Amino acid sequence: MKFRTGLKQFLAVATFALIAIGCDPATGSNVNHEDDPDFVRGKNRLARKDLAGSILSFEKAIANNPANNLAHFELALIFYSPSSGDHTDYVAACYHFQRHIILNPDSKHADNIVGMIKVCKKEIAKDIAMAPIPLSEINAIHTLRTKLAKADADNANLKTQVEAMRGRLNQRGGEVATTLASKPVGLSVQQSPSSSQPLGSRTGSSISPDVNGRRIHRLKPKESLYSVARQYGIPFAQLKAANPRLARNPRDLKPGVTVNIPSKRN
Image (cartoon, rainbow, N blue to C red; front, top):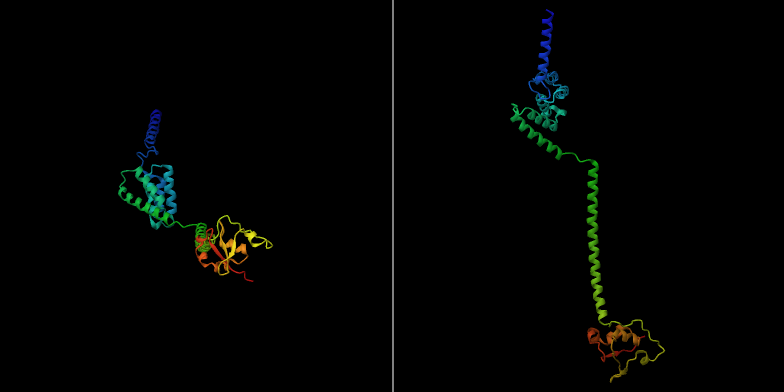
């Protein structure tokens, strides 16, 4: 009698061990996920609209058995629904939908889940595009725009100044060109003959009156109206007025050309 009782106990333990081995939670084979205590608790809380409590229960069910595709699906629906309020999370919904399909490719919800995943991705992209810009970055952008506007104004002002300076240089360049045309290169403008020397010895040039009694000077090489005016101590303008043709045509200032020497004005 005792032997039979012991045999029955042994067979019961062996049967329980075989059932346990055949129900490996890691693979999820031969497991009814709906009977998981945490999954059942999550469904009950969801029926009472206790979203926070149901999320906690379904997450515990997944922690106990990562192959529980039903818990993934329930979590995905909660995070996907706009009516979930603060619990709406399209990133989490997309993850749990994908996990449900991976764990259960033959899911009866597969077609609907594909569409819902697309919606999740669109909402995620929309949130990224509409993400608020930090105040520090807004201030930095405003400062940069102000600096760019000031730089544009400075550039415009500088351009105006350059154009004005260019105009003045062109005007002065014309005046310098006229002066240089009447002044041979190499002439020393610092020659200041002594007033105590005779005129002929100071200049080394010949001076003689013409038939009308006017004084004339015959140009030597490298002489100009300017140098002649300095030699005779008369204003350059006065000498030019006495020789209008030579003043208009500096190229005619050649050796041997006569220059009228006016009387020095007091």
